[in-house]
Length: 628
Picture 1: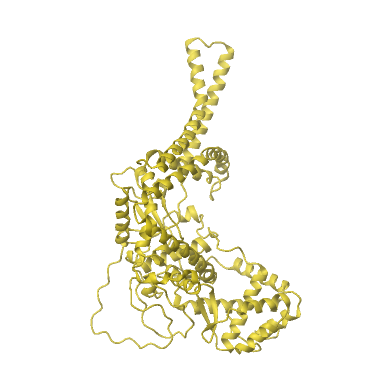
Picture 2 (picture 1 turned 45 degrees about the horizontal axis):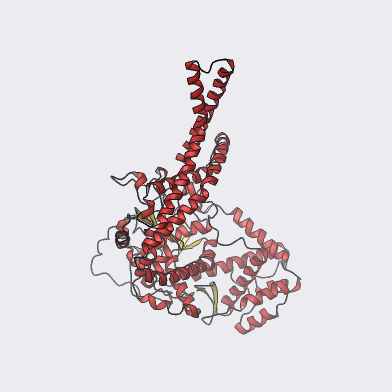
């Protein structure tokens, strides 16, 4: 631990946490100590008489009850499974360069090497202790389980956006935290706090019978008292550990770390925008983008192009990206993308016809166009139920006429909200709707062999290697070449298929022998029980947005109807904007002024701004549109 002030402070607070545990043991042992004294006094004849006999019986019974209760609390704390962050575990054989970089960092910092590396679909990095037997991790030979170093968890967007030197600088203070973590007092205090935290949730765990749930209530009350007693010291202990790690890491890439912190903030902004504007519409349509990490590079490049404050960031893209440290970046990207869908949307653990991966090239057709036509069909279905021109065709004019003749669209908004809720309730669970589709990523608790048949085209190397991909636009689906393998790194960026492709030429040479499958990339096996519940498909752990209001749903549906009419009658096309998500392209250009005109129609019953826009673009609102 050296002379680091933060480490000394952390040790002092760790001892304070352990004193709380010691006081609890002393309180539990106190009735037994009194009972021993009374029994010894009675046996020697010093404490004789009817009163002392009664006291011996009462205290002895109380001691037994307290000891049994203390043993029950201790057993619950010891057996409770601490929370485990859902991550994608990376074996050393799948990322030898990344492991070598971490090992070199640990050697320069003179700290233990992390016992493993895992990725999380978030813009953060930390150390996580996974030594509890319930986590199911194999013990390191020759090392006691409690002495095993923690696992290094890295945010997956960092690997695609950051360069190797930047990632090394950012990870230095995180890896340095394995030094304080190895101190026996700090490790014992952390195990005690994690056990208390896990024991609190035992009473609320699904699947408990009423008797066990009733017995777990008082245990939870005792554990909460212990948590309140050591909460402040535990927080100060972690601050001391962080300060010690930061102090130790100053000797490694300190100057570069200051510059790399700017990339951390930029990556967070781009990742949040990509999830909320691009991934969320796809998840709602039953599709999950299979290359989210590659897409964040394009989103951040677009952000740097639009924002003058971010100028110069794209010049870094010529350096080696950190995802090159992985043997199969496409496979890892797919696994983290599926995990992101589970975390932020509550999607199932495996794919199928109603929950399938989508590549960025197919996003406009598979997500944008399908989303617009589904919402347009729902809008006309609701109008039919409200009795609005039942015999009319599915035209934009029908919608505009109805909204322009009503003071507010509250009735229509409420009906759309009810219809969306009804469809969500009637929809069968996605995971049970169909058998698993091939190549749809990793299932929680099950290993997915790398190199299995992935039918989704892999992104181009510029996306996989941390270079921006072109925002795809809609294009006719033509026969094209076979998709690239997940590990391929061709020299062309992502581009949509825009025309017929030549057919394959006859093969003259025999097909090369298939490459051996790399080691499996898997998600920790206790996700279904610890994170998702027994059913496996619970609500999202981290919802990206609150439920949409009725007015927001109405605006989305009217906008979708306008876009369908523009696509069918004015030659427009669905497209993808890396920062704003689904967008309408007219003549290859975006029209961001559509939202305000739709709001004028909905809120003010004024159709003129929208009519003017339709006339400018050449949309014919009286023509019926194609619906899903």
